[in-house]
Image (cartoon, rainbow, N blue to C red):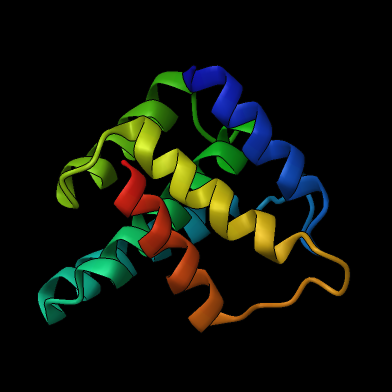
Length: 125
């Protein structure tokens, strides 16, 4: 399951403006971890869950670009998931939901729409 979700996420990454090749993916992953912590401190659980998805996205990209190892990628995803009381697989599904929306033609970024689909996903988990 885990590798299937990672593969789907990397497929979506290839459709986004930054693509799969991203030498900054590791730094972006750490920036998303900071945003996750900030969302938790503010008490916005939905924002925190969405940031956990972003951590997973950039961890997968960092792994794909050989910036971190597979076990390190998995640990970053597990840590982000624990912070929001989800499993690693659930956090990967959050990332897939968000990136599926962004991978549409024109690569739109719509926070309200992303919040809606992530809320719906959480209701199904």
